[in-house]
Image 1 (tube, one colour):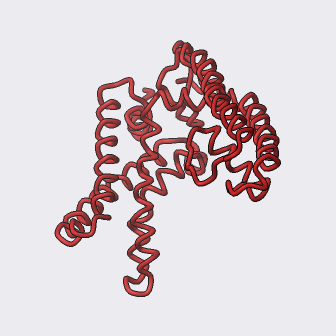
Image 2 (cartoon, one colour; image 1 turned 180 degrees about the horizontal axis):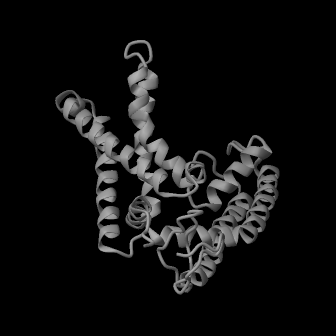
Length: 273
């Protein structure tokens, strides 16, 4: 009688719960993990408030340890349930998961008196557990795909803006260079153009001549159009990505995701989904 390996069945079931959200158990796992991430980040933020740390420091530490242990279990299960553990460990999500888990443990091996600054940095590193949220926000994956698809167009656009900033900064230096406006060099002029074009407007440098103010007006008006261009490029690509139907299944063999809604086999390694 041909029976399936119970260990294999258990791994497949765990993989489905941890990596996918098509089942009630998978959805519950994701929700619980989201809550833990948010609690972890909130605790780290509150711990940085000195009077709260003095009063509730022990409680904060206890909560952090509980969450760290749970993150460790989650990370271990993720490694255990995939067929190529090293690929997951070295993947962006794997490195983020590891970075979210390590800081609390590293603090145990650093002296509390001679390495206070390092300990402080390690505590702050725990804020980056919020990066784990990216896995559970489908829209973020669509946005990243849209940005990746737009990178050539955005690259050309950024290059054009840099050239324009140098030209306008040089012109402003020529116009205002002899006045008391603060345009003491071409780099200062370029700095002013970037600040003005992005509508930040610090006000530390300002033209005083009529011609300089006219040029400043043109740069300000131009800034509104320049800001809108990359938004339009990414929005166009995002609409195309969003219309693609994607399911939540993750390949057990190579950990590939973003399969089409009707896919029965992994598009990378051809493993049955």
